[in-house]
Image (cartoon, rainbow, N blue to C red):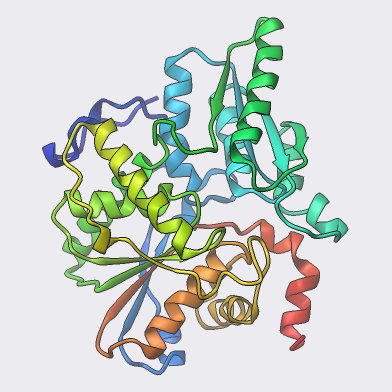
Length: 351
């Protein structure tokens, strides 16, 4: 299943990349007037609803998986392997996309978050993984990307010995950034929506983790001649570690598409102000953002990615120059709310 060619020459070989169709079209671009008022009514606020990508509760990973699973299908794979945190949105959607394309899925869950709450290990994304019939494996380390990929490789070798044709979606850097292409596509989509609606955006705020969403979006915007500021809110590593990862990702995208890289070091803006207390854990600003997003705009945010990114958008709206238009990229993660039920109830009670 592939999309029709639709991208301009500025995006190089994007039209020729294998791509599986996992959702039906553009995601909504909506104003957030209530949140803007709650932030002091100093400018406009909008949201790009990539939580509405349809597949198994949606999220940004659907766009990324269109290219990974397109490549898997091209290779004749019958099984997909992926690694991620216990409450990973990526592994949940990889299992869903695999099922949609008639493939099996093996999921490796890494110990990235020190939580002993039983809900964290049984509800949210884990429950959906099980409903999708994914084969679950575990990896004891949370900050060993290369090791996690090696263990996936060992599982894949076992599957090959059984006559299966596995395809690995890698975690560690150094692989073709197929997932980032989903957000090069999103940049093209977004600019078309802004033009059609006559909107001007000054800043886009997005969660910055693997670098595929942030890097792909930034690369696509610059390739298409847009100078919109893109601010990445660090969700896994600090700004010092995240910045070179983003620069490397943009260079890899340019190589993959065979076009010039128009992203400069000055384009890569990252903030780790809302990272504490760490990956998968919500600090006070994140909890406030989750409650405010829900009660002002009925937006459901998660404590790992979108809650922190929304905290960044709120801070920018409250303290940045007035008169600007800020766009929050909602990357999904909704099922994880239920795995953090006790934390969220404490936040609502002022704990």
